[in-house]
Image (cartoon, rainbow, N blue to C red; front, side, top):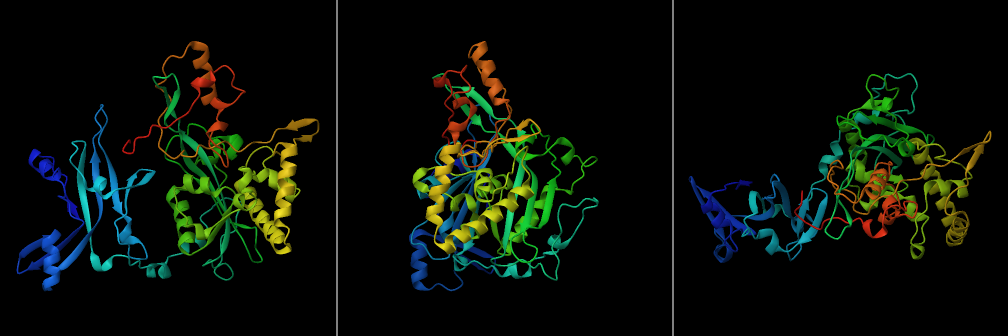
Length: 466
């Protein structure tokens, strides 16, 4: 690991030299002497079999990006993922990591520092003999005690922790997951030169509740995790109609629930992930995104993908599937993560039944036919002459993962237009599962006061933007 954050003009001129950063070096340390080889000289020494020569591969660079415009510099990473793959790759595979934004880049882009706004801060080399070797032996010694501990002091428990006698999760253990989240920062929107609204920074969401239930065995369907998250950030919107979360739920003095720090909830999921458990749920992409955890596809069972006809390009909501297949009404007044996780598990069992009976394709056609007749929504429930409108799942933009800042930089569109825009953005519209940008209030006919041409939402395509 080399610290290269030197900003003198002499050092910058060296970094600007083409090919200055080698992808491979050879080092000899002998009797207090340090000798380094690279390029053709390194190849020659390797051919000669020079003793005590250790070869190192460049695996990553942390670069400082100074975009100017009165913005603070920030860091991005360039990682050569070829050295961490199971098999040896003949070519380098460099990727740019800028917060949530990741894309492949050419070696020239990763290693070129001729631009004044881009300076290497840290360079990391790894001994070549360790390339393409992944040691997972540490997973055998995981401390899983957190999964069996019960720190809740509340009398009314909504979950039953795992027990060492009959609940030992491991590879292929199915667990059903659902999360709820709140908004901690509003989106920042401005108008470009064409008069179109642009989302500069999308809304930021924080985890508020995590529910995990057993997916098999005698206790199938019983929760063993139901954690509410004590957030340190001020909550802008509790999204109660979508999340079921109210202010008191996350207040340490008033909460009736099992309130834990984010790290505790995250570690529980991390342990289950590394034990090899399979996460089951409906629209898990959003749950993983807000939780900020990556789960390999081999460990994901997403029922939104099972009850889906690709050619029709429409995924079905959990509430609609529960109403049609399970004859149950869920999400009537609000969302409940235990109910949603349990429903997803039951839908998975129903999917297995259809598959075993060889009627899956027929049932999918029937489901979509019924959905077309009902607008893909369960009917409204009436109770004592009161009509309960179901809480929909809020729409999600495909790339809604970037940090955001409050709405404070909107130019004048005219009083009536701008007021309508503010009302739409303040209406609690938040991301959800299975929809796209066209589901936004700004792109919908029920917001007629805003000119359609002024409602296009785009993201600035800058790979190095903070």
